[in-house]
Length: 408
Image (cartoon, rainbow, N blue to C red; front, top):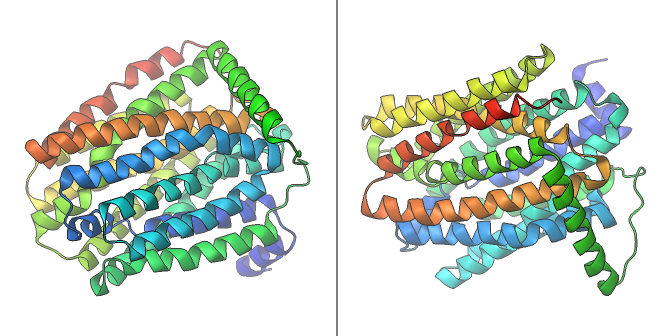
């Protein structure tokens, strides 16, 4: 049986791993169409650096507000419904973006998109972990999560390149492309995601609010009792704070340094995403060879911090973007590694809620990062924010050293 026929057969029988990989692919594709032109789009509407960051801050604050409620929704009403709502609500938000020309319109679009993203944060990983079964956890889940990131990076390559070319026609066109892909994701999730292992409950508004408080309280209590989870959440907050000037300023900085258009940035995105993909592949091999989480952490965060300091320091296009590509290799390692590390210590009944709680605090830190780094970039420079970011990333290494002292 050929590889393609095997995939078709797996989809037909709703194999959890294959379905998970395809949902991750569609999610990554829909979220990458604006990767090369989003900030340029905001600048084209008359926003300055700080205003563009404030727009994205609204997105992060929205994520902070919605994370726990939507995580509880996934635990109570089903991860499948939650994943479907991501694709639907995300499409609505970006349809508003396509038609809007005002700061207030962008604010509304960001809030709706933020709500959409929180429906899938935690719910998708929680679904596949439970679908595969905790009995097969050791080694297998690490592999599945890291392999999914490889497929996700392939989607990022395709989406970023296609979005870059569409943006040369009009900077708003990629938003329409996102809506079309979101519709496909909604239909695919409805047709192929199975959730026989969990029967969603029907609750009233009053009991729902009470149960939400109980779950959040129990999750917080659990986190306090689990130092590894507590410190991994702290690492999430520091790293998300530090990543914001890189997420927001890479396209305008390199467009200016290289005097290139959005199509060229699309090809730069191909190289960046390919580098991330190889980073995810490396993590897959490292987890297969039973490397300790501490050793992986030292390698990953040293690479992340040192490379972006070098990229920020240099003001020539090719040297600066080369070190940025190296940094993105580390980003490809960081997400699946930290996801596997965190999932290892969370019980099934709290998984979606705690993962959403982790995402909530991470996005709160990201919102602060956007405001602070937006201010620094406006009054100092893009490159200085990258150097500060690199120093912050390096600061989490001692935390991983501390985690190594706890027994798994």
